Amino acid sequence: MITKPKGTVDILPGESQKWAKLEEAIRKVCKLFNYKEIRTPIFESSEVFHRDVNDTSDMVTKETYDFKDRSDRGITLRPEGTAGVARAFVENKLYVENPVSKLFYMGPMFRYERPQKGRKRQFNQFGVEALGSDSPWIDVEVIALGATIIRALGLKDVTVKINSLGDEESRNKYKDVLIKHFSQYKDCLCSDCLNRLEKNPLRILDCKVDRDKDFFKSAPKINDYLNDYSKDRFEKVLRGLDDCDLKYVIDDNLVRGLDYYSHTVFELEVNVPEFGAQNVIGAGGRYDKLISDLGGPVTPGVGMAFGVERLLMAADLSGKQLAKPDSVHAYIIALGDLAQEAALKIMNVLRIGGLSCDIDYLGGSLKSQFKKADKNNAKFTLILGENELKDKVINVKNNETDEQETIEIRDVYAYLLTKLNKPICGNKNK
Image 1 (cartoon, rainbow, N blue to C red):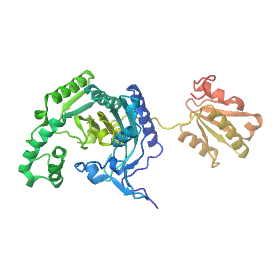
Image 2 (cartoon, one colour; image 1 turned 90 degrees about the vertical axis):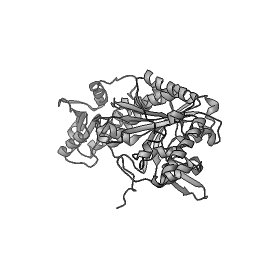
Image 3 (cartoon, helix red, strand yellow; image 1 turned 180 degrees about the vertical axis):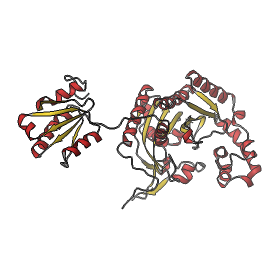
Image 4 (tube, rainbow, N blue to C red; image 1 turned 135 degrees about the horizontal axis):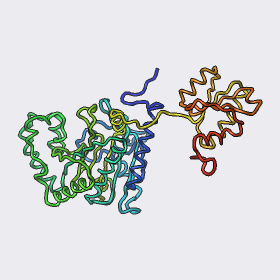
């Protein structure tokens, strides 16, 4: 038996309905905020993700799926969505069409890491990118959009963990101080942090190995090294969160996992005890050099991404039902070949008119077909045998009331519409 690759999952019927409902909710919220959907390839030229030799993020150095195609070109399965959107923004010159582009995406991403609960090697991500404005208020809008999606799932207790990395001047000053501090403890640093000390000392603050050690806790805080412009900008973002009634906590060690961030960085947490310590389900920040790094004009941007699996898990663990069980409007029990053939015509009329229906193609017994109607949560069961066929009638059972009527076959569509409180005239697709 051939099985799925390690770190992947099959999304089966029933579960896939939850995904569809979540995607529907995401699209509705993005419409409220006037963000437009963009779809980029699931693989890109490796240069899109491997741009900077100083990038020390685990995603870039350890987790990407890289390979050569038949023309010996370097290809990488996308590990995140922002870089691909930025590449598309530059290549298609979206900056010419709109001074500010507000975009969202959904789709599979790929990272080679140890599979665990809520984190697979193929996972799905939803994200937004707002490109073209360096306003602190658009940072707030992106955060508010994320919080709105979480609340749309029925999860009310949302906390924003937030920090500022400042502008380049502030970060350079802070990097020098960090290098001086952590250089005293080289013998105590993990191997990853030793590498980060030389290439990008801010990434040490994201370390999960050393973070509980005393020398880590006593490290200088970036807020003490922000220049006046960066401080003022951060204060505006915090005031904006207050204006949107968003609860936030300033986290001095929050730097995020990718090296292109500047100024605002944030994570969105939900209060789901079953999650344990990992309550973060969305995160993002501002990046002002990514577009120019990919060959475009200097363009400020801010973005955010959610793991779709973690969103679904949070909803499930909180007892929020995203989707009702699948159902059909009508299930037809057809007894005999002639009845089966007639049922095909009836189903064609119902489906063209916007009503869902099904039938047992295995020709089971009357009892087994009634069970299948129940399994499909049919609102109505239609019974058609040879006698009914001769009289051009069909028996219709309302499965909610158990009432049964015999009507003419030609009237079955109008009859079901009336019972379902759907309009007979006008748009039949409703």
